[in-house]
Length: 138
Length: 138
DNA sequence: TGTCAAGTTTAGAATATTTCTAAAATATTC
DNA sequence: GAATATTTTAGAAATATTCTAAACTTGACA
Ligand SMILES: [Mn+2]
Ligand SMILES: [Mn+2]
Ligand SMILES: [Zn+2]
Ligand SMILES: [Zn+2]
Image (cartoon, rainbow over all chains, first blue to last red; front, top):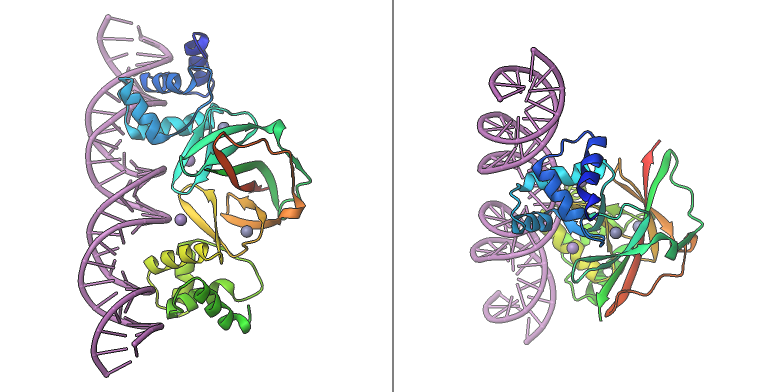
Protein backbone atom coordinates (compact mmCIF):
# COMPACT_ATOMS: atom_id res chain seq x y z
CA UNK A 1 0.00 0.00 0.00
CA UNK A 2 1.19 3.53 -0.66
CA UNK A 3 -1.49 6.18 -0.45
CA UNK A 4 -4.59 4.16 -1.01
CA UNK A 5 -3.00 2.48 1.99
CA UNK A 6 -4.75 4.31 4.76
CA UNK A 7 -8.25 4.10 3.40
CA UNK A 8 -7.47 0.52 2.48
CA UNK A 9 -6.55 -0.48 6.00
CA UNK A 10 -9.43 1.46 7.53
CA UNK A 11 -11.75 -0.42 5.25
CA UNK A 12 -10.22 -3.77 6.11
CA UNK A 13 -10.47 -3.00 9.82
CA UNK A 14 -14.11 -2.07 9.38
CA UNK A 15 -14.72 -5.36 7.58
CA UNK A 16 -13.23 -7.16 10.54
CA UNK A 17 -15.26 -5.11 13.02
CA UNK A 18 -12.15 -3.50 14.41
CA UNK A 19 -12.17 0.20 15.23
CA UNK A 20 -9.49 2.10 13.36
CA UNK A 21 -7.57 3.26 16.41
CA UNK A 22 -4.28 5.14 16.41
CA UNK A 23 -2.41 1.96 17.36
CA UNK A 24 -4.00 -0.26 14.73
CA UNK A 25 -3.50 2.30 11.99
CA UNK A 26 0.10 2.92 13.00
CA UNK A 27 0.98 -0.77 13.17
CA UNK A 28 -0.92 -1.35 9.94
CA UNK A 29 1.15 1.32 8.24
CA UNK A 30 4.41 -0.20 9.48
CA UNK A 31 3.32 -3.64 8.32
CA UNK A 32 1.66 -2.87 5.01
CA UNK A 33 3.36 0.25 3.61
CA UNK A 34 6.00 -0.35 1.01
CA UNK A 35 6.04 -3.00 -1.62
CA UNK A 36 8.01 -5.58 0.29
CA UNK A 37 6.47 -8.50 2.12
CA UNK A 38 7.45 -8.63 5.77
CA UNK A 39 8.21 -11.39 8.25
CA UNK A 40 8.36 -9.91 11.69
CA UNK A 41 8.13 -10.87 15.36
CA UNK A 42 5.99 -9.05 17.91
CA UNK A 43 9.07 -7.72 19.58
CA UNK A 44 10.59 -6.41 16.35
CA UNK A 45 7.37 -4.65 15.44
CA UNK A 46 7.13 -3.13 18.90
CA UNK A 47 10.64 -1.75 18.53
CA UNK A 48 9.89 -0.41 15.07
CA UNK A 49 6.80 1.31 16.39
CA UNK A 50 8.77 2.99 19.16
CA UNK A 51 11.39 4.15 16.67
CA UNK A 52 8.64 5.57 14.50
CA UNK A 53 7.37 7.57 17.46
CA UNK A 54 4.23 5.48 17.77
CA UNK A 55 3.41 4.87 21.40
CA UNK A 56 2.00 1.40 21.76
CA UNK A 57 2.36 -1.29 24.41
CA UNK A 58 3.66 -4.77 23.72
CA UNK A 59 0.31 -6.22 24.77
CA UNK A 60 -1.38 -4.16 22.09
CA UNK A 61 1.16 -5.29 19.52
CA UNK A 62 0.26 -8.90 20.34
CA UNK A 63 -3.47 -8.14 20.35
CA UNK A 64 -3.23 -6.36 17.03
CA UNK A 65 -1.13 -9.04 15.37
CA UNK A 66 -3.60 -11.72 16.37
CA UNK A 67 -6.57 -9.62 15.30
CA UNK A 68 -4.92 -8.96 11.95
CA UNK A 69 -4.37 -12.70 11.58
CA UNK A 70 -8.03 -13.43 12.26
CA UNK A 71 -8.98 -10.71 9.78
CA UNK A 72 -6.85 -12.41 7.14
CA UNK A 73 -4.41 -9.51 6.88
CA UNK A 74 -1.54 -11.54 8.32
CA UNK A 75 -0.56 -15.11 8.92
CA UNK A 76 1.54 -16.69 11.63
CA UNK A 77 4.57 -18.75 10.65
CA UNK A 78 6.02 -21.34 13.02
CA UNK A 79 9.69 -22.05 12.41
CA UNK A 80 11.40 -21.30 15.66
CA UNK A 81 10.59 -22.86 19.00
CA UNK A 82 9.83 -19.99 21.33
CA UNK A 83 8.99 -17.17 18.95
CA UNK A 84 6.27 -16.48 16.40
CA UNK A 85 6.76 -14.74 13.09
CA UNK A 86 3.97 -12.81 11.42
CA UNK A 87 3.83 -12.69 7.65
CA UNK A 88 2.25 -9.96 5.54
CA UNK A 89 2.12 -12.35 2.62
CA UNK A 90 -1.19 -14.15 3.09
CA UNK A 91 -1.13 -15.89 -0.26
CA UNK A 92 -0.22 -19.53 -0.58
CA UNK A 93 3.55 -19.83 -0.29
CA UNK A 94 6.42 -21.47 1.56
CA UNK A 95 9.67 -20.41 3.25
CA UNK A 96 13.38 -20.57 3.44
CA UNK A 97 14.39 -20.13 7.06
CA UNK A 98 17.93 -19.08 7.85
CA UNK A 99 18.33 -20.70 11.27
CA UNK A 100 21.48 -18.71 12.00
CA UNK A 101 20.04 -15.28 11.28
CA UNK A 102 16.39 -16.04 12.06
CA UNK A 103 15.39 -14.75 8.63
CA UNK A 104 12.45 -15.89 6.52
CA UNK A 105 12.33 -15.66 2.72
CA UNK A 106 9.27 -16.45 0.63
CA UNK A 107 9.04 -19.27 -1.85
CA UNK A 108 6.07 -18.78 -4.20
CA UNK A 109 3.75 -21.79 -4.02
CA UNK A 110 4.05 -22.45 -7.74
CA UNK A 111 7.81 -22.98 -7.45
CA UNK A 112 7.32 -26.06 -5.29
CA UNK A 113 5.41 -29.03 -6.48
CA UNK A 114 4.06 -31.31 -3.80
CA UNK A 115 2.80 -34.41 -5.53
CA UNK A 116 0.72 -37.04 -3.83
CA UNK A 117 0.01 -36.09 -0.24
CA UNK A 118 -1.20 -39.14 1.66
CA UNK A 119 -4.66 -38.82 3.19
CA UNK A 120 -4.77 -37.27 6.66
CA UNK A 121 -5.40 -39.27 9.88
CA UNK A 122 -8.96 -40.55 10.33
CA UNK A 123 -11.35 -37.89 11.48
CA UNK A 124 -9.17 -34.98 10.37
CA UNK A 125 -9.08 -32.59 7.45
CA UNK A 126 -6.13 -30.80 5.93
CA UNK A 127 -5.97 -27.17 6.96
CA UNK A 128 -2.80 -26.20 5.16
CA UNK A 129 0.60 -27.46 4.08
CA UNK A 130 3.70 -25.63 5.28
CA UNK A 131 7.07 -26.28 3.74
CA UNK A 132 10.09 -24.88 5.56
CA UNK A 133 13.47 -25.18 3.91
CA UNK A 134 16.02 -24.68 6.66
CA UNK A 135 19.24 -23.10 5.42
CA UNK A 136 22.61 -22.20 7.00
CA UNK A 137 25.25 -19.72 5.96
CA UNK A 138 28.09 -21.42 4.14
CA UNK B 1 14.31 -52.01 20.89
CA UNK B 2 13.27 -54.92 23.06
CA UNK B 3 16.13 -56.67 24.82
CA UNK B 4 19.03 -55.85 22.61
CA UNK B 5 17.75 -52.46 23.64
CA UNK B 6 19.87 -51.86 26.69
CA UNK B 7 23.19 -52.87 25.24
CA UNK B 8 22.18 -50.96 22.13
CA UNK B 9 21.62 -47.72 23.96
CA UNK B 10 24.72 -48.13 26.11
CA UNK B 11 26.70 -48.55 22.95
CA UNK B 12 25.16 -45.50 21.35
CA UNK B 13 25.83 -43.42 24.44
CA UNK B 14 29.44 -44.57 24.41
CA UNK B 15 29.73 -43.58 20.77
CA UNK B 16 28.50 -40.12 21.70
CA UNK B 17 30.87 -39.92 24.67
CA UNK B 18 27.99 -39.91 27.11
CA UNK B 19 28.24 -41.91 30.31
CA UNK B 20 25.47 -44.45 30.63
CA UNK B 21 23.92 -43.02 33.76
CA UNK B 22 20.71 -44.18 35.42
CA UNK B 23 18.83 -41.18 34.04
CA UNK B 24 20.05 -41.53 30.47
CA UNK B 25 19.36 -45.25 30.42
CA UNK B 26 15.91 -44.78 31.93
CA UNK B 27 14.91 -42.03 29.52
CA UNK B 28 16.42 -43.99 26.66
CA UNK B 29 14.30 -46.98 27.58
CA UNK B 30 11.13 -44.87 27.70
CA UNK B 31 11.95 -43.32 24.35
CA UNK B 32 13.27 -46.28 22.41
CA UNK B 33 11.55 -49.38 23.81
CA UNK B 34 8.62 -50.67 21.85
CA UNK B 35 8.19 -50.67 18.15
CA UNK B 36 6.35 -47.40 17.85
CA UNK B 37 7.96 -44.14 16.90
CA UNK B 38 7.40 -41.41 19.45
CA UNK B 39 6.79 -37.67 19.31
CA UNK B 40 7.08 -36.26 22.78
CA UNK B 41 7.66 -33.00 24.64
CA UNK B 42 10.13 -32.58 27.49
CA UNK B 43 7.29 -32.19 29.93
CA UNK B 44 5.49 -35.30 28.74
CA UNK B 45 8.66 -37.36 29.03
CA UNK B 46 9.34 -36.00 32.50
CA UNK B 47 5.86 -37.05 33.58
CA UNK B 48 6.27 -40.47 32.03
CA UNK B 49 9.55 -40.92 33.85
CA UNK B 50 7.97 -40.04 37.18
CA UNK B 51 5.12 -42.46 36.54
CA UNK B 52 7.67 -45.16 35.75
CA UNK B 53 9.33 -44.55 39.09
CA UNK B 54 12.41 -43.00 37.49
CA UNK B 55 13.61 -40.07 39.53
CA UNK B 56 14.92 -37.44 37.16
CA UNK B 57 14.77 -33.65 37.16
CA UNK B 58 13.25 -31.63 34.35
CA UNK B 59 16.64 -30.02 33.70
CA UNK B 60 18.11 -33.46 33.11
CA UNK B 61 15.26 -34.35 30.77
CA UNK B 62 16.12 -31.28 28.69
CA UNK B 63 19.84 -31.98 28.85
CA UNK B 64 19.32 -35.57 27.82
CA UNK B 65 16.94 -34.77 24.97
CA UNK B 66 19.42 -32.30 23.50
CA UNK B 67 22.33 -34.69 23.96
CA UNK B 68 20.33 -37.44 22.25
CA UNK B 69 19.61 -35.02 19.40
CA UNK B 70 23.29 -34.24 19.00
CA UNK B 71 24.07 -37.94 19.10
CA UNK B 72 21.60 -38.47 16.27
CA UNK B 73 19.26 -40.60 18.37
CA UNK B 74 16.47 -38.00 18.23
CA UNK B 75 15.44 -35.01 16.23
CA UNK B 76 13.59 -31.86 17.22
CA UNK B 77 10.38 -30.96 15.39
CA UNK B 78 9.09 -27.40 15.35
CA UNK B 79 5.34 -27.14 14.80
CA UNK B 80 4.01 -25.29 17.79
CA UNK B 81 5.07 -21.86 18.93
CA UNK B 82 6.23 -22.26 22.48
CA UNK B 83 6.97 -25.96 22.76
CA UNK B 84 9.40 -28.41 21.20
CA UNK B 85 8.63 -31.95 20.16
CA UNK B 86 11.29 -34.63 20.08
CA UNK B 87 11.02 -37.38 17.51
CA UNK B 88 12.48 -40.88 17.81
CA UNK B 89 12.20 -41.27 14.06
CA UNK B 90 15.46 -39.84 12.78
CA UNK B 91 14.98 -40.96 9.20
CA UNK B 92 13.89 -38.58 6.49
CA UNK B 93 10.16 -37.99 6.87
CA UNK B 94 7.45 -35.38 7.31
CA UNK B 95 4.45 -34.80 9.58
CA UNK B 96 0.77 -34.38 9.98
CA UNK B 97 0.17 -32.06 12.92
CA UNK B 98 -3.22 -32.06 14.57
CA UNK B 99 -3.32 -28.50 15.86
CA UNK B 100 -6.30 -29.23 18.09
CA UNK B 101 -4.79 -32.23 19.86
CA UNK B 102 -1.13 -31.30 19.52
CA UNK B 103 -0.44 -34.69 17.92
CA UNK B 104 2.21 -35.52 15.35
CA UNK B 105 1.94 -38.37 12.84
CA UNK B 106 4.72 -39.44 10.51
CA UNK B 107 4.58 -39.23 6.74
CA UNK B 108 7.31 -41.37 5.15
CA UNK B 109 9.50 -39.23 2.90
CA UNK B 110 8.79 -41.38 -0.14
CA UNK B 111 5.06 -40.63 0.08
CA UNK B 112 5.64 -36.95 -0.64
CA UNK B 113 7.28 -35.79 -3.79
CA UNK B 114 8.80 -32.34 -3.69
CA UNK B 115 9.73 -31.42 -7.20
CA UNK B 116 11.87 -28.46 -8.12
CA UNK B 117 13.00 -26.63 -5.00
CA UNK B 118 14.26 -23.17 -5.97
CA UNK B 119 17.87 -22.47 -5.05
CA UNK B 120 18.42 -21.09 -1.53
CA UNK B 121 19.27 -17.44 -0.75
CA UNK B 122 22.80 -16.36 -1.73
CA UNK B 123 25.42 -17.53 0.72
CA UNK B 124 23.28 -20.27 2.22
CA UNK B 125 22.99 -24.01 1.89
CA UNK B 126 19.98 -26.23 2.42
CA UNK B 127 20.10 -28.04 5.73
CA UNK B 128 16.79 -29.87 5.50
CA UNK B 129 13.24 -29.63 4.20
CA UNK B 130 10.38 -29.92 6.66
CA UNK B 131 6.84 -30.42 5.49
CA UNK B 132 4.09 -29.98 8.06
CA UNK B 133 0.54 -30.78 7.05
CA UNK B 134 -1.67 -29.05 9.58
CA UNK B 135 -4.96 -30.89 10.16
CA UNK B 136 -8.08 -30.25 12.24
CA UNK B 137 -10.73 -32.61 13.57
CA UNK B 138 -13.80 -32.59 11.41
C1' DT C 1 -21.40 19.18 20.99
C1' DG C 2 -21.90 16.41 25.27
C1' DT C 3 -23.12 11.93 27.23
C1' DC C 4 -22.86 7.22 27.33
C1' DA C 5 -21.91 2.41 26.31
C1' DA C 6 -18.97 -0.46 24.07
C1' DG C 7 -14.52 -1.39 22.65
C1' DT C 8 -9.47 -0.70 23.26
C1' DT C 9 -5.16 0.09 25.45
C1' DT C 10 -2.19 -0.38 29.11
C1' DA C 11 1.04 -1.63 33.07
C1' DG C 12 2.10 -5.02 35.46
C1' DA C 13 1.33 -9.64 37.07
C1' DA C 14 0.97 -14.28 35.68
C1' DT C 15 2.01 -18.31 32.88
C1' DA C 16 4.70 -21.50 30.19
C1' DT C 17 8.72 -23.29 28.39
C1' DT C 18 13.45 -23.47 28.36
C1' DT C 19 18.10 -22.36 30.03
C1' DC C 20 21.45 -21.26 33.54
C1' DT C 21 24.10 -21.73 37.87
C1' DA C 22 26.78 -23.70 41.09
C1' DA C 23 26.70 -27.15 44.58
C1' DA C 24 26.01 -32.13 45.49
C1' DA C 25 26.15 -36.64 43.57
C1' DT C 26 27.90 -40.15 40.55
C1' DA C 27 30.90 -42.44 37.28
C1' DT C 28 35.44 -43.59 35.58
C1' DT C 29 40.36 -43.83 35.92
C1' DC C 30 44.32 -45.04 38.24
C1' DG D 1 39.60 -46.70 47.30
C1' DA D 2 41.14 -41.95 46.14
C1' DA D 3 41.32 -38.52 42.64
C1' DT D 4 39.24 -36.51 38.62
C1' DA D 5 35.88 -35.63 35.34
C1' DT D 6 31.20 -35.70 34.32
C1' DT D 7 26.45 -35.45 35.52
C1' DT D 8 22.48 -34.26 38.12
C1' DT D 9 19.83 -31.22 40.61
C1' DA D 10 17.03 -27.39 42.82
C1' DG D 11 16.09 -23.25 42.25
C1' DA D 12 16.72 -18.94 39.94
C1' DA D 13 16.68 -16.64 35.61
C1' DA D 14 15.54 -15.79 30.91
C1' DT D 15 12.17 -15.50 27.20
C1' DA D 16 8.00 -15.21 24.97
C1' DT D 17 3.32 -14.78 25.49
C1' DT D 18 -1.16 -14.14 27.77
C1' DC D 19 -4.09 -12.34 31.35
C1' DT D 20 -6.31 -8.84 34.31
C1' DA D 21 -8.68 -5.07 35.49
C1' DA D 22 -8.41 -0.16 35.47
C1' DA D 23 -7.96 3.92 32.50
C1' DC D 24 -8.78 5.64 28.13
C1' DT D 25 -10.79 6.21 23.44
C1' DT D 26 -14.19 5.66 20.09
C1' DG D 27 -18.59 5.95 17.83
C1' DA D 28 -23.54 6.48 18.41
C1' DC D 29 -26.90 9.38 19.29
C1' DA D 30 -29.37 12.93 21.70
MN1 LIG E 1 -0.91 -16.97 18.31
MN1 LIG F 1 16.80 -27.04 21.40
ZN1 LIG G 1 6.15 -15.51 3.88
ZN1 LIG H 1 8.20 -37.96 13.12
